[in-house]
Length: 287
Length: 251
Image (tube, rainbow over all chains, first blue to last red; front, side, top):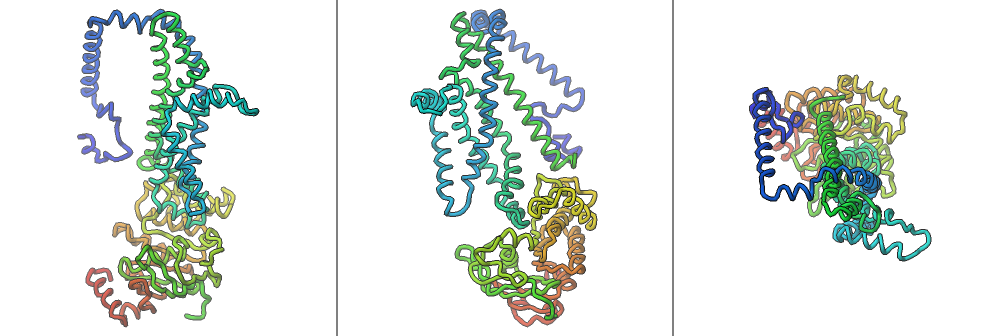
C-alpha cells in the first residue's frame, strides 16, 4: 500500500503478486522467511507426533513403493498427456466454432444458434463419465463400418464433446465482453463480419478469457483419468494395478503428484502470459 | 458554391430506434471538397445521421447517394461503400490489442489487399504527416487522448476515402488536447477533403465549415454559411441553442 502511494502508480501494469505481497526491503523478506519456516516446522512436528501418523505414512507415503511404482505410473502418465494435448487442441478450435455459431445474427441463421444452444445445454448437463461410457462402449458396439473401435478414440471424443460445451461458453463470455464500438470501428473500415471476428473481436476475447480457459483445461487434465474406465491404461489405471498388487496406496500418491506437477507450470505460464499482455498494452510500451 | 459536383446526398432520411424517431426526414447535399458542420443539442440526431451514411445503421425510409450512386439499396455491397467513406468516432475506438501501425494497416492490407511493405510505408508516411511517427510501435493505451484520436483519423485516412465523417471527435478529450485534433481536421479541410462533421466546437465550425446545419429533433431546421447561422439565425430554436452555447462560453 505504502509503495503505491510512494510511486503513485498502483495501476494495472504494476500489480504485485497477491501471494508474495509487498516483499520489498530486506527487513520484510527476513520477517516473511522466518514466519514461514516457523509455521511449517510447527505443522510438521504436530503431524509427525499425532497418533495415527505411522500408519498413514506406511499406507500412503512408503518410500520404497513410491520408487518402484513411479516409473510405471510415470510412463502411463504419458498417455494422459497425449489424451489431453490432443483433446485441448481440438477443443480450442471446436468450442470457438460453437461460440461463433451462437453469435451469428439474423433470422435466417436461427437454426444454427439453436443448435449451438442445444449442444452446450446437452453436454454441460450430462455427467462426463456417462458420455465416456455411452461413446466408449456404445459406439463400438454398433459395429458400423468406418467407425473406429479404439476406446482411446472414443474417450478423447467424449472429453472433447463435454469440454467444448464449457469452453464455448467461456469464449462466448469473452466475445460478448468486447464493446460493440470495436465491431463498429472494424466494419466502418470495410472489414467483413468474418474479418472483424478474426482480427478484432476474437483476439481481444481470447486474451480476456485466458484464466477461465486455463481453469477448464486443468479440469480436463484431471478428467483424462476417466478415460481409464473404458480400457486404456493411463496413470490412474496403472496406479490402481500397482495398489492392487501391494495393498498400499502410495502409487496413488505418485499419480497425484504427477497431475499436480503438470498443473502448476500451466498456471504459472498463464499468469506470465497475462502479465506480459498487460505490460505491452499499458505500462511497458512496445517491446 | 453550387457549381461543384455532389459528393453526398440524403433524401428524406428517416430512422427510428424502437418507438423513438431519431431522424425525421433529413435532406442534405454535400458538394465535393465541401466541409459541412452539423450542430445541435445532444439527441438531435447528429451521430445517427453520420452512422446512417456509413451504413452502420440501416435507414427506415429515404435514400442516400454517394457520388450519384444510391448506397441504401438492399443489394448494395456495404463493405464496398464503407471502404469509400471514413468515419471517426467520439471514443476513438482504436483496436487495443494492436500497435498503432497495425491499427492503421489492418484495413489497407486486409480489405484493399495491399502488400505488407506498401501498407506499412503508406501508414508510416501518414503517421509522420500528423506527428505520430515515433508512436507507430506503441499500443493505443499508451497514448494521450489527442494522440489516439489522431491515430483514429489516420486509420480512416489510410483507406483514401472519398468522404470523411467526424462524430464529435473532440468531445471525449481533455480541453488542452482538443486543439491538436482540430488542427488535423483543418489541415484535411485545407487539403480539399470532403467532410461532414458533428461538433460542439462552435468556433471551429465557424472558421472551418463552408456550411453549418442546425439539427433539431431529427430535422435540419436551418442551414447556411457559418457566418450567417452564427450571427443571424432565423429560427427561434437556433437562436435559443446558440444563446445557450454563448452562455456556456463555447462561442
